[in-house]
Length: 173
Image 1 (cartoon, one colour):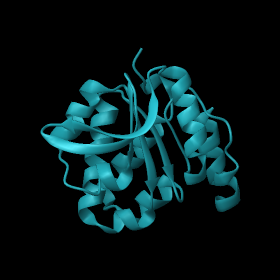
Image 2 (cartoon, rainbow, N blue to C red; image 1 turned 180 degrees about the vertical axis):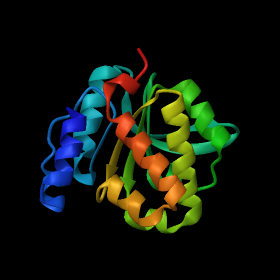
Image 3 (cartoon, one colour; image 1 turned 60 degrees about the vertical axis):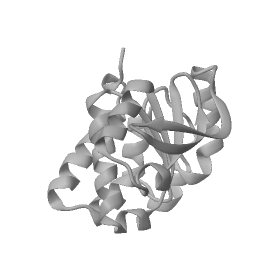
Image 4 (cartoon, one colour; image 1 turned 30 degrees about the horizontal axis):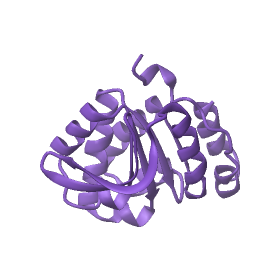
């Protein structure tokens, strides 16, 4: 399961273990950047309307570029969804339109920007509260990046939410 893979990551060699996660679960999870194609394939099995193409969608009056889009799924580069101008309202609108969100290429340097970090916190809050499935690829463990860059208050909440989002109990029925 994703929870076991994520927990096992903490116990194994940090870089080798993280890249050894090969199985895709049926719930929210976080993977190395190189697994993007595998995740898209997995999501396409769940959302038959999923099309891998560069497209865009409008959320609360703002245009966002997607690399995949389907009836239930939307995929974004981290820089597009959290690095650019976006707001809590955009994330609420996203949660109303899709039940699965895929964020690709989260890099530690993205969290060096306080604005990107805050947007990520808002996004996590909305996805967690609305029970939206989250798939993400990152260059290193999200846990490590959160611990390194986030304030104490945000760190505890984010780590708790990321942990909860790894379990199928979080997801919509």
